[in-house]
Length: 382
Image 1: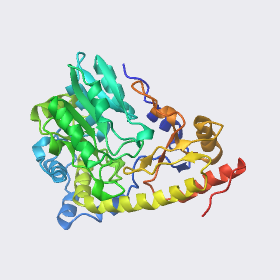
Image 2: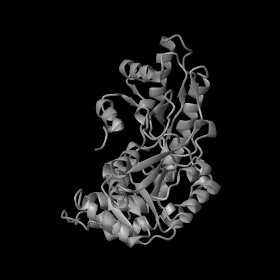
Image 3: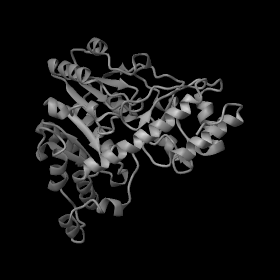
Image 4: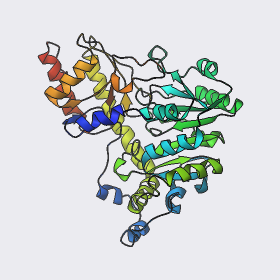
C-alpha cells in the first residue's frame, strides 16, 4: 500500500492559490508559439496533418530517435516513452523489484522513488546524503548497505531537493560498485543539463552500464511539463519489454501531439537548456543576495545543479510555522522539510526547498523581505 504523496497533497492545496511559487521544481516554460518558432519548415508542414489516433506504445519513431540522439551509445530501440517521469519510475520499479529483493535508495529523494520500493520489496535501505558532507554520496556507506539479495540502487543527480551534482570520480565509483555486484542502477536524471557549470555534467548512466536505467522527462530541465512526456533509456531490451507490459495497464501510449512537440523541443534542446541555465544563474545571484542579507536566519549552500536548493532556516519559530505563515500572509510558497521526511533515513527538519528555475523571482523575494521586516528583521537589499 502506497503512502500519501505528501508533495502532491501539499501542491494540491497551495500550488494554484499561492501567488509567488518560489519552490517550483521546473525551469521556466514556454508558450506553444515559442516552441513552434524553434521548428524547421518540414516539421511545421506536418503539424496540420498530424493524425489524432493512437500512437506506438513505446513512443513514435521520431521521438525515440530524438531522445537517443541525446545519449552517447543508446539507439532508438533502447528508449521507452512514458506519460511523464512518474509513470516511467513506476513501471521500472514494478518490472525490477519483488518481495524477496533488497533495494537501496538515496535520501532525501522524490517520494515515489522511496514509496514504490517499500511497497514492493521485502527490505529497503536508505543511503543518506548529509549536509555536513555537502550532500555527497558516501561510497563506503553504500558498500556497507549491500546484501546478498540487493537488486537495485536508485539515485538522483543532480539531486532533488539539494541540488547536489556528484563529481565525475564519485559517479564512476558508484558505477563500478553496481557493476561489481551486478546490480541494477536506477538513475533519475531529470535535471541533467541544469548544472551551474556545464563542465560538471555527468555521463548518463545508461551509456556507461548495461544494467542502468536513465530516467528523463521534458518537464524539468527543458521546462515543458505540460507535454507530459518522459522516457527511460536502457541497454537491456528484456527489461524494457517488461516495463512496457506494466505500461499497458496505465497510459498505454502518450498523446500524439505531445510527442510531436517533444520531438521539436529535443531537436532544439541545446537552445532550450542554455536559456534555462542562464535564467537559473541569474536567479541564484538573487537568492545569494537575499541570504547574504539575512545570515542570522538562513544557512545557505549554493547548489551545483538542478533548479532547486535546500537551505536551512534558523528562526526560532521553526521552518514549518515560518513557511505556513509566509504563504498565508504573503502568498509566497516554499516547501518545508516535512515534505521530504523519509522512512529510510534522517532528513534535516529545519530545511525548506526553494526553486530558482522560473522567471519573475524578484517580486516574491521582495514579499519575503517585507515579511521578515514586519517580524523585526532587516528588509531585503536591492
